[in-house]
Image 1 (cartoon, one colour):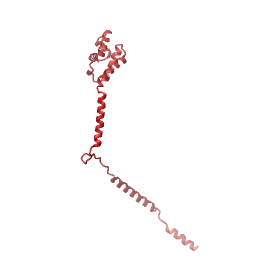
Image 2 (cartoon, rainbow, N blue to C red):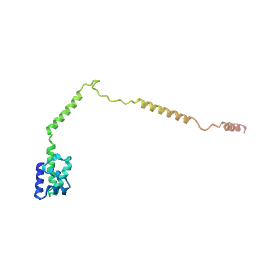
Image 3 (cartoon, one colour):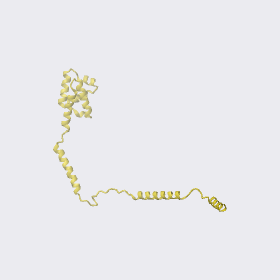
Length: 164
C-alpha cells in the first residue's frame, strides 16, 4: 500500500496540487489524504470507504481509477489471504476426524443426548372426546322429531272410513 500511496503523492505533486487543496476539492480531511499517501490503512475503520476514497482521489488526479483500485485490491488480497491451502486441508481433516470420533463414542446413559418426547396422549383424549360428543349430538338431532305426532286426526280418519 505504501507504493500505491507514494504513487498517488508523486502524481499530486507533479500536478502542482497541495494536499490541502486536494482535500478541499474532494471534501475529505487532510489527514485522510495523508494516511492514504503514507499507506496507513489502519487509520480507516472501513476498507470499503477507503477504496471509494482511493477511487475518488485517483479520478481527481487524472489517473485511471479502476487500475488504481485494482492495485489496492491486490494489496488487500495479499494481506488478508494469509491462510495457506495446507492449513485449510488440515483443519478440514481435523473436523472429519472429530466426526468419526463422535460416531465411535460409547453410548451410555451418562453420555447420551435425550430429546424431549412429545406427550401425545392428551391430544388423543381430546380428539376422542370431541368425536363422542359430536356423535351424541348428531344422534339426538336425528332421532328426536321436532313436530309432534297428530294422532287424533289419524284415528278420526280411520274411524270415518269404517262408518262410510
